[in-house]
Image (tube, rainbow, N blue to C red; front, side, top):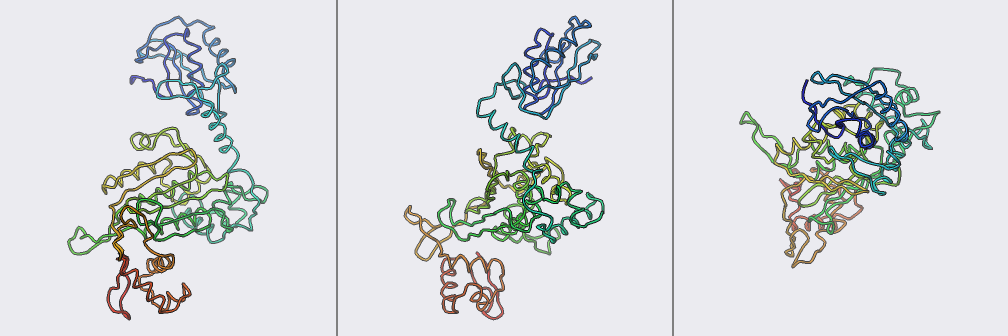
Length: 453
């Protein structure tokens, strides 16, 4: 058989003389992965080491595990042959973490067991409580609060991709079968996904520099998860730069984004899938001159780093199992745990740098873009003049700019109606935006269109 190796879910002990250390390893693996295997009769390099196994040996191991590990687990303990040498294999699993061994709490780091700090233990217990209760707890909303449009779109996508069988799509029946309705009440997960009462907030902004000092556009949207995913992706697509390139046939031109849109989509969906929703939270999209930041409330939902998921086939921890499952059913998520690998792969091909910041309260994923200098009429670059930051545009200019971004063919009359200003005032705003090199008019006033620079 292939040579076994110690890792985060596998531990070797030469004899049962190391039983106490083995019990600590069991607790630490349960706290990290909820499962693992310990072998007695293997050296650290995986080579079998003969030792005496009698009738009571397996019972002694079982008794020690029963007495030392809390809450109790029920492992499978048996003898197996490795290279014709009899060894003891202890397999175990459990979902009731945190687990203690001899009254102390440990976690697995590589092939070592480390005692947890009070802060780590507290965070694990808080996260465990969230995992067990939040999604399945009934909210104050009922089936009448479900958005018919969102549910219909979900059902269409989920059945058309084959991940959900066709069924009675009556709201109560469908939500019940999805596990999002309990005694007529929407669960917290059901409310976050399908409520028409705008349960979640998304703030989006474009800044003139790499700092949050001078905004070019800012907006705040409320909705359910499906609605806000669409809003976030659309906002980023509107506010990133695109260039024309020749297609492979050498005839047609194609628009190419500065950051792969599929990578942006994966990042946004991951953000909503893995956020924490048990308090007043706000998702955030910040577009700076040098990067795009996607921020979700709640730290990275794994003890591994994002690079670990990119470089290895890791088991994905689902902070919101029901929410993730609904996103999978409607084909927003291809497979669990593949999102980060896809993001990094797409960005590597496009030569786009990625970084992240993991705080206790939120997780930020940054996509870097080529810095663009915005020069205003008074010599201000990206909102900075002589080392002092200044506003690049006014609030009215930001609003008009957002209208033009949404509709390149918008007329002066339509802009006046949208912002409640006179044609003369709008003309002044347009002139200022042109002077600041933010827009230009392509073609005539009657037959042309706007282009955001």
